[in-house]
Each structure stands twice: as structure tokens, then as C-alpha cells.
Length: 213
Image (cartoon, rainbow, N blue to C red; front, side, top):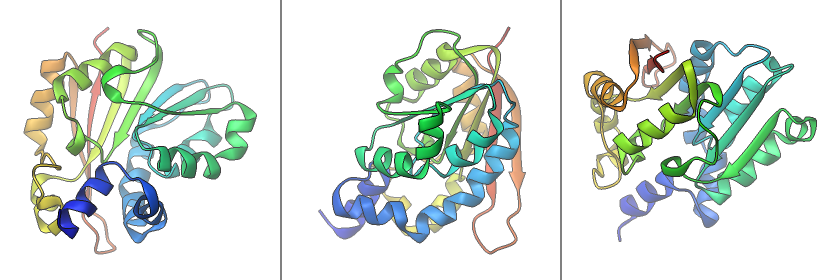
């Protein structure tokens, strides 16, 4: 297995020494522009019950938690390394009872039907192995009328990033393809949001959808 293969699979599911380095790397910092955009779109309210799928090093959890005076944010990530890093970053909110982080998979979420008011997943859609099943799982745990925010880079953007050309690891999506997936899963799609970044990084994209009432 070549270096590109190793890095691509580490980005998909960080583990070991390389995973720990990725958690602290500039790559994580570049993700923060898209994560901040998703937080703005999510508009967390004090009593929200929010799910983040694939929380990485916990940056977005840390930005959402202060807004939840009587709410709660749960996180699921399949990487033990990222659970550890995110737990360290959000220790005070975990102690307070605002944040709950677990290792697990989107394909089988450990939550009851109609539990969350909002859900967000950032830079993970490329790695969903059974996209329709996993989108339906998000639909299941959202309350009727609940908001879903999917932050992503377009296929065109990812192709500019050499590692992401590993299409056996990365599934590239354009907005119309993502909309079709969410509609097939049963979501009511609200449309694409786009923010032009002024710092030379990739522009930020997010697709918004709701669970029908």
C-alpha cells in the first residue's frame, strides 16, 4: 500500500500515530472554515438536542456547546483516536453534562426514533459506505421538522486535492447528487448554501434538509 493509500484511509478513519498527527494537523485547521459555516447554518438554540456524526477532533462540538444552556449535543465517530481528542477538547462540557461523545457508526445509531431537533455532519459524506441506508438512519433519529446540515467539498474541489482522488476511499458528490440522495432517503431538501472563503482555501458548501412533519 502506497503513501497516498495510507493517508487517504487515515483521513477516512484516523488511528495510531498517524491519526494522532492528523488530529493536530493543518488539515484539521482547514476544516474549521467549513465547520464554522455549518455552525452558523445550524443556529443552535438553548434547548436543542443536536447530533454530530463524525465529530473529528471536536472543534464543532466545542463551538456549539456554549449555546446549549438547557440542551445537549451528542457525537458519534468511528475513530477511537478522534473520540479521545474530542473528549479532551470538550472536557468541561462533558463534565457539565452538555456533551456526550461515543465511538460508533452512522449505519446503526444508538438513539431512539424522533430524538434530535437537529443533526450535522461535516466532511464525512465522502466516506459513507451505504449512503442511502445511512441517510435514512439520520432521518429516523430526527424529530419531524428537524434540520439536517451536511457540510462538504464538491467533487470538483476534491479532485484538486491529490489524496482525495483515491476514489476507492472518497466518494465525490456534487450538489445535485447529494440532493437526490437525501430526497430518496425521505428528506425534504431546502437547498445548497455556499460561502466563498477569502483565505485561499476551498469554498465552503452545505446542503440543508428537514424531516417532513
